[in-house]
Image 1 (cartoon, rainbow, N blue to C red):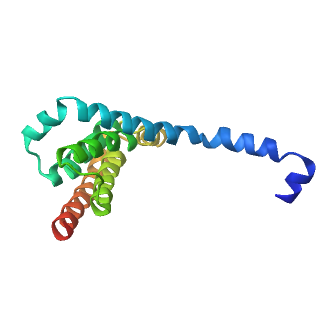
Image 2 (image 1 turned 120 degrees about the vertical axis):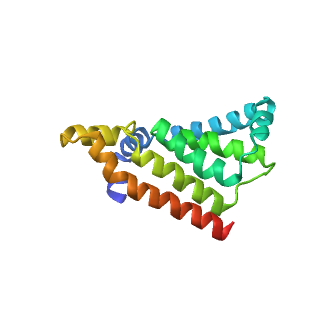
Image 3 (image 1 turned 30 degrees about the horizontal axis):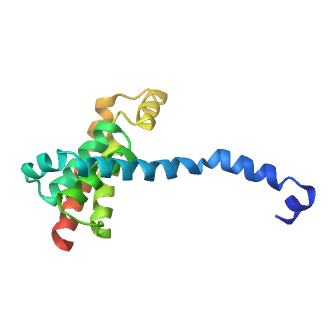
Length: 156
């Protein structure tokens, strides 16, 4: 750090670091979640979802997992599930254990989906078939979801 200060390149290092890390992406994500939550709370969607009478476990584990599979992302399902959970159950915050289990379910869906670019690129690189990949991944995925459900049953 001292060497960077002495030769005057600290400013360039900071600029490059900011460009590479893109800290505005996280800020925009948080802003997007808050906007979505506000729109969700003012719309009629919360009444429609409340009419479905989903259990908390179904919403967080089932819906989280399915959105992870459907989108191949982690942040998008989280920005959907968490505001729905907060609104449907009239909470101001999500308990850490529920957040953890939901995030885990979303992550498991994200890992197994062929929509995720890493899965597609890896299968292409190794010249592997999707059905063999799924046969290999479905048992640990089901086990992971069973662990999430068991954890939910024991702790919540």
